[in-house]
Amino acid sequence: MEHAHRTVADIEGPWEDSDFDSGLIERCKRAWAKPITKLNNQELATLLRQNIAVADLLPIARKRVRDQIDDDTEFFDGELREAVNHAERRL
Image (tube, rainbow, N blue to C red; front, side, top):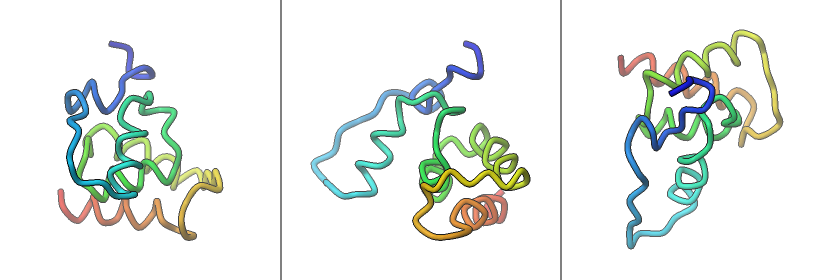
């Protein structure tokens, strides 16, 4: 499958619904079927913090941080950078 069209579902498998409901779960669920190159900064940060598809998402997130791409979706300034640093420490 072409990288630009790969989704988290392609990497991790289909979304499995849970009886537990939270904002975090809803954010992950909405991001699950999006092409990974179309995820916004906040979605990337959320998935990285949850240790989801890190090998595929980390290069995308690093590039956005390096290129200083600000799409006004982060909950706080530097959220994506912090998530990248957190993911790198776990490697």
